[in-house]
Image (cartoon, rainbow, N blue to C red):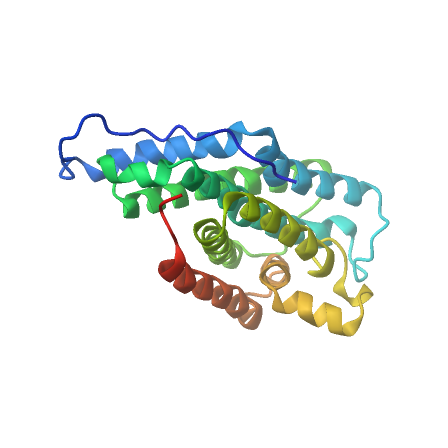
Length: 266
């Protein structure tokens, strides 16, 4: 699971003069997004959670067919689940932990002394998540198609929409924890939540293998609902409205709570 990152290198202003916030916004956001992306990928622990675990699950359990998959080929069942795992690992765990330690080390507070506004900072963080998820999705699809003989039955329009909704929801959850808890608590809770979600959400094995009550809980949680929505989309069956609404509901609730509880100061 992901561990404590190194202190962030968010640039700070020098001197006591007021910052001119009329400076171009787009270059500032672009530069910060690039830095956020580098912060996400420079940590070995972060790479394990965002790339190592999803790809390892996909390759190993597609080749070693030991998990219940509801009568589907293992790779057909696993690709949507692994995409969901990638989204959760990036938004909830990697972003949550990174932002929590940025707050602990005072990087978020020092943003008030830079030309980049706090809103611009959040946009930059979202762009970094989108870029990393694009790489993750490309790797998963390339490995599945090139090495494991996987072909989607559809989803060219529906699947990207589901990915976007999932990315927003899990990033909101990560920011909610990062902005309201101590960094060490965020580290522990995001890793623990990620592990529990993996076990009960039916993304790596058929949820029918679980007790009915536990399976129902798993499908009501954002990772289970996201996996179901992606599985429906890639099967060419369009949008699974109820699961997608569940994911969106989690995201909206997390965003609303974060807007009230997020603290920029350590």
